[in-house]
Length: 435
Image (cartoon, rainbow, N blue to C red; front, side, top):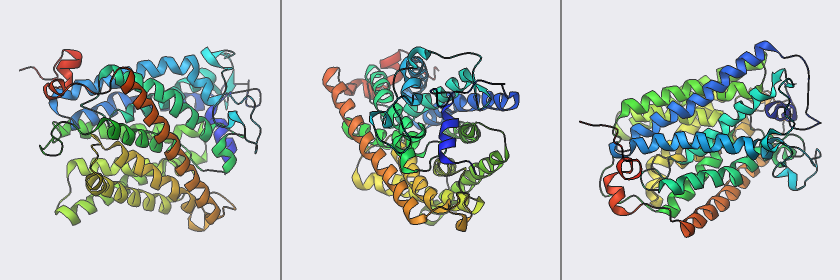
């Protein structure tokens, strides 16, 4: 079993003198990580773009694709300028101690200062690690965009994604994966591939965005069904495949552990499908295409933090329970509280990440088939819950502040006439479907 600190250090590559490693390149591991990087990039474009694009109305599908592309462009550049450094720089960090750098990294690697093309960490060139981590940084803000789809100004969305990446994603990713001395690493939180940093973080930001923006015009009075479920299911399928790069790649190794991670990732998706289909059958009489796709993604979200720490039985239970919780959040909770989360970012990623992160603390115990020796279930559940609550509070407060600042500066929402005509025409002067 690889320790949590070693997983974090391996995931973050060469981030400081303490973590630096210059040696021979492991061609097998490097080849796999190159492949995993492409899988994660595929999750955003075209995967997430197709999944989101099929669910929105036809007049807004291109606006979703443009947001995905621009997220990749803006975040990719910011990642090199300062994002990579904020996540991986461990200057001033000491294992078990807390300081400012327990919350965010320094700027010693800004503009990739000191990066040696010949250097290797865990047998992988640092440049490969930089792009692999960049892929995570790109897709996480892109997920948030689904919550405010069909009503936010394009300029405001670009500014929000850039600021949110800077003040929410980079610090939380550092706290989770920053190695010894980082906040949640010191706590002993288990998060292999992003339950907190990616899914809870983006889900809570999506909730803040739809609350600050308000509902779409005529929602929910007028039905707004998906315009093309074939696009949506195609995108969901690409996300499922890409998720193997997301989860397995996070171990930065080709060893016996990858089999467990791969198996658990697959089981999480399969169990998620069964859970959602069962809930739809019980409540509506039959399962839906959008439902089974959502169930697969819910199960994948739930297993993400747990995939290296639980056994097959734990993966199945996590997939099932996460799927049921997400189904409830989307079909009941959202309507009960009246918020308009366009593409159910909070319902899928936020709720799924919360359930998966907490259940990781339970099913990681060897007595329940897990792999973390000596784990105290009660203490670990408290640690997992603390990491979840901290992420929710931090992200909600910062996201809310960023949205309010942008609203004050340039305004967040398009005018009603533009919203009714559709953002494809009013924001980009194009139409996805020309007769």
